[in-house]
Image 1 (cartoon, rainbow, N blue to C red):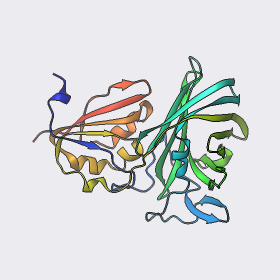
Image 2 (cartoon, one colour):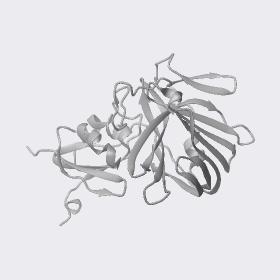
Image 3 (cartoon, rainbow, N blue to C red):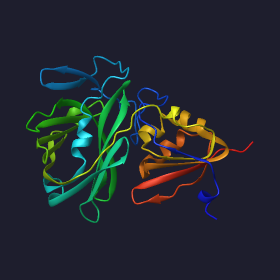
Image 4 (cartoon, rainbow, N blue to C red):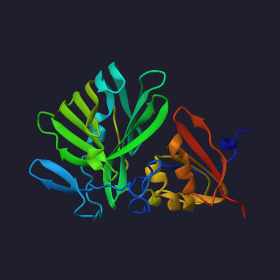
Length: 298
């Protein structure tokens, strides 16, 4: 009998990224080192441009700059991707959908060895909650994953024009990865990326369909009682890792936690956040993996 049919009651988690006892600076990038800290994180505003800087490290529930990008990008986009190291892809289609209440995600298979992943998520860097753009996929058969944080934002005007600039969270910042999303209007997008000063991709995209995105908010701890014999958490590591203590509080002795919404290369880091649980299996499907963890019975 499948164990899912035997365990009850259960808790279905949709933990908001700001609704747990998170530690400042938690970073779920693969191979993160001491250099993987955001140089540009805290929001300040001047004139028509909102810029992220590191001068003010307070967070305290401040509004997350540029968050409307997630709702404005949600949908199916298509258009030619040019000036890539692999040549031109015409068209390149990206269907940006909500992976959960805190992440917008899409994947495009370019050919047998190359794919592109887009991910937008709220993460904490330098004690500040910021909008992060993650770019990954397979490049000539090698899996890669890069993380950038929002550093500049021009709010969308009455004509629907606006821009978002993301730079690498490593010490090299914009000198390493400089990614810009510019809306000409609600249905026309320019995606311009430079890596180490060299053009990496230039995508002129048109919206074909619109998707709805509902961003999570509030404190889930007020809505969930525990403990439970089964806890299901289909959330990104940016929540699963800093919220580990809250998730563990919901799990009864002898209970099972199933954690998903995890890319394969993120599995070990999420696992490390739950050292008190025993891993019983790690099923995978395409780029995604789930962790099945058990708490020891008394």
